[in-house]
Length: 355
Image (cartoon, rainbow, N blue to C red; front, side, top):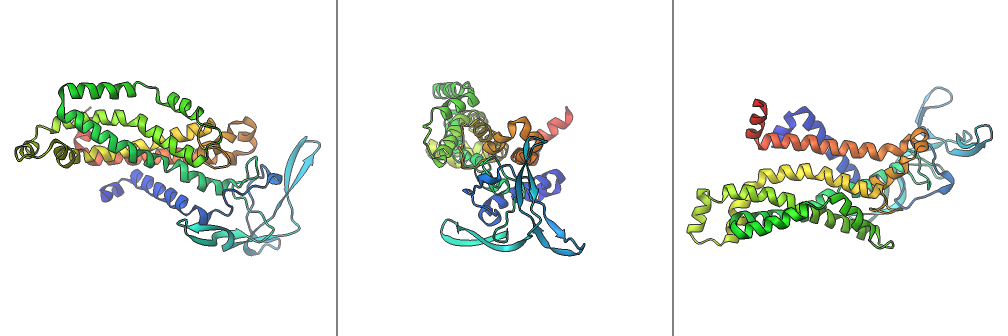
């Protein structure tokens, strides 16, 4: 399937984008020049650092930057930042910086790049609390880009087993199980998320809150998936290989798990690929509203919250970067999901071509 995806230009680009994003957030501690807890309130809303490779004599130089100085302009009646040209700070590759643990075990201080002691390097500026936006993008992505997959690990097993049992047994069992699923589907999911997130204790840690958000997303989403699986099982359960399994005395659970559900693999792969973007948007939406991941922990949603003010959009556009990444990630997943659907369901593609 990878070869067929690679043949499609847009799918190839989407796959490369997603692999790059997940690779970057996996290496967040190594790439980020500052830790997730770094803050310098004296440098709030500092613009992105300018990197120079040409010195004042017009010759090539190792990359360097200048620190910013905060100054108040009476004429403009606002605080501005100017470069302090009195001292250069060179950017060093594979620099020793703040300590982190590889795989949570091995202590390490090596980073992809850094700046000389005393210098500040903010590639995408800072936020209201003087935190490096570039570094927080990686740590925020670890939450925003993984919430979907974690929810799927709960959602899909429940949906598969529930839909499989409902479709296989049929009759009253099917009717009762589907009415329950339809009742859950009738609940407005986003509003329920807001209500449940709002009643969580204020002192709850972001890790616990993140886990609850994952569980809530999974418990809301399994019903619609189970309904589709049930429809597929209804069409599969009368096939010859299922009847043969019944004849040799296989139990209903074994028939469902071993013989019927594997036939839904194509749909499951497609559904998983297309479901992840919705969970990324749900988590980002909750965090944007202040009901998801809480500060000082980062997620793309709560980072984007700061950019909702018009003055920040106008004068501090670097704060919009999380929104751009959300857009790119969701678009890439949708493009990849559509391509996988065309590959695994060529009949559906042919039907669309005749319309």
